[in-house]
Length: 502
Image (cartoon, rainbow, N blue to C red; front, side, top):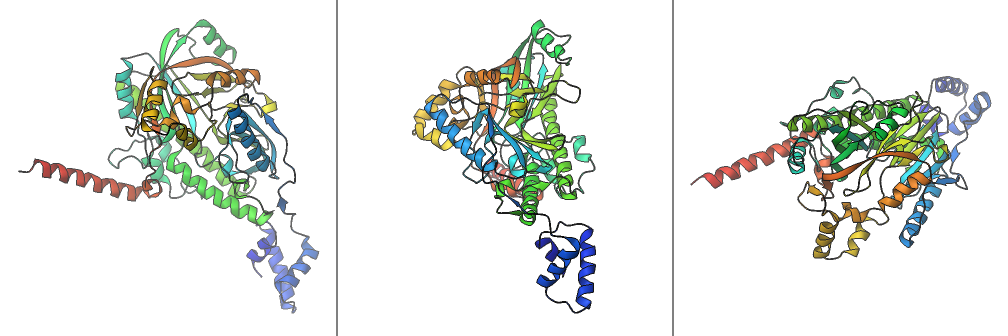
């Protein structure tokens, strides 16, 4: 008999297993054979293993901070409710809620919908923060330096979109790379991925947005009343760079490792737990290591934002007046509960009693909201993270079957702003037509008392990632990515030489 037999029988790993194995060895020395009989005798001395977890027969109630009025919204909410019902049968979850921007994520059993949030007791569910760990917002405010098209040109040079990572001769350094974290079991071997993805935003709905804000006495007073000195000594018009992205390949690999560990754990302690509900015990060493890895990912992602912002501000020759940001795909600890949000903005009070600041984008042609959390515990003290979708990308495109229809819709809905697409191809599924009614989202934020809307950053222009065909580079190692980039560069030089040669 060995530790694997005891763990398979339901006993938790730990020093007590050695005591059990010594007792088993003594029994075997006395002639007792067969693991089944040995386990029966060991249970008499050490007791039964802890009871195995099982999914609840009925789901916990879900608090809904969402109102559906149109047929499409009602169909969307029905799907969201079904997903939350499956998730809220998970035994370690204590409560759940959905925000005004909620929309279904997939057909996977127990998956959390976008705009969903849960409170979990002493456990972390990797699928509930998703592979885009720490998808977040960050804003820097500065005085206008030139026309918006010139600033967008500078922003294009400051950031990077698309699959893969930065070229080996175009890396950006930040002190976050030098932190002593790389022996953590969940981060080991990932430093190169952290390196190639700094000042790198990815694809999908990630963006870099430039807008305008008029700072007046009322706005400054609202910040001061909440305990913030933001814009205390400034009045007038400012511009804002707002970026939206997650932790890139670094976070995706952390998620894969965390999900693998969660599946192993729930296989030991649970019966028939869906993969999307698998959890890590936050009180054991594995769970603590994963928690520490998550905290590093949060620091790295903020550093990624900071790199893009500093490069942009340097290029236009100015400095930030104010900067702040927030996560909306993450896990936060409050007491013994771990609050998971997949597209949910934290809106509680911090340890000093100050309401958290949040940035909520609506769509590229609408303002980005600056909010102060109202700490409404009825909805786990969250607010929405955006406007959400009523239709999937595929379903939306079916409504505009021809390229001419799509082009006309894109031009119409982006006519008042300067929009750049990293691939050069406009993506209908990321234009304003793809998202819910922004006016209704703002109204529900107020009606459900989720947050106080303090200011709105008016849109001027943005760079959108959009959805391109996924490159296999996303799954290659950094060394392989660099080798591929080097080969591309050699081909480019060779082609240029051939064109020049007589």
